[in-house]
Length: 87
Image (cartoon, rainbow, N blue to C red; front, side, top):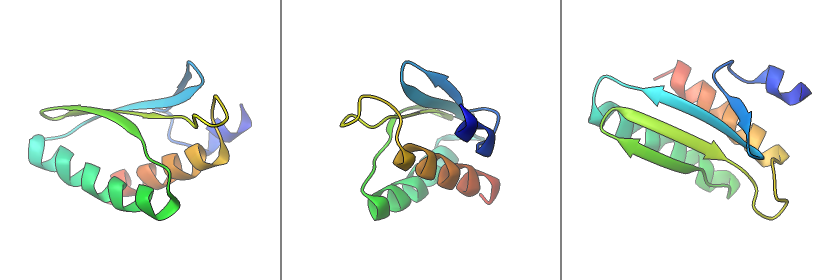
């Protein structure tokens, strides 16, 4: 998939979704990152599925209306990459 080249190499395409795992120093850092993503997700009205355990975060992006990945998933993934780089 050509669009995958625009994302960080840690994103994987699996089960019609984009997935990426993150690890942070502690829970507070992970939660701060999640808050920043939530603000951006709300702006484009496209929300991730995610799971957080202490300093670990798994993000899954998919568009349920299309049954797979859409442009919104790539847009949000790029924004997540940017937030992570600038944290």
